[in-house]
Length: 96
Image 1 (tube, one colour):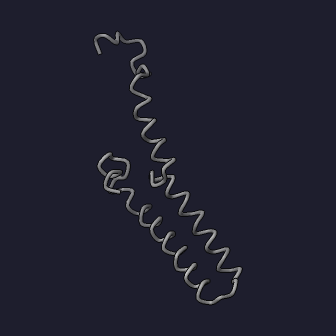
Image 2 (cartoon, helix red, strand yellow):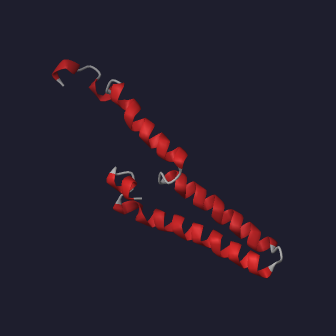
Image 3 (cartoon, helix red, strand yellow):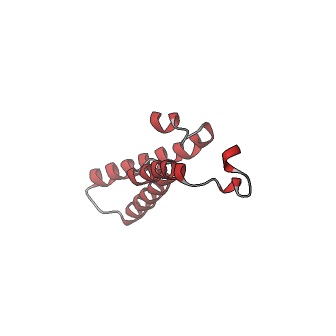
């Protein structure tokens, strides 16, 4: 998280979404504990856990919290450096 904040990937405005991610991951773990202690398979809890895992994955991807999404952010920032600036079409790029 500190690195993502430092690079500006996560800002103060993103904290609610990051909090939602943490809540979803916490719910996944709480349900896992409940399933283990009961010793039985509760399909309602399994479905709820699956939904929480899906939500956590989506939020992780949105906020750069997964390896794939971090790689995408890094490649997007480095790949764009060599591309001509589309906003400078029609202007003399040497004077820009």
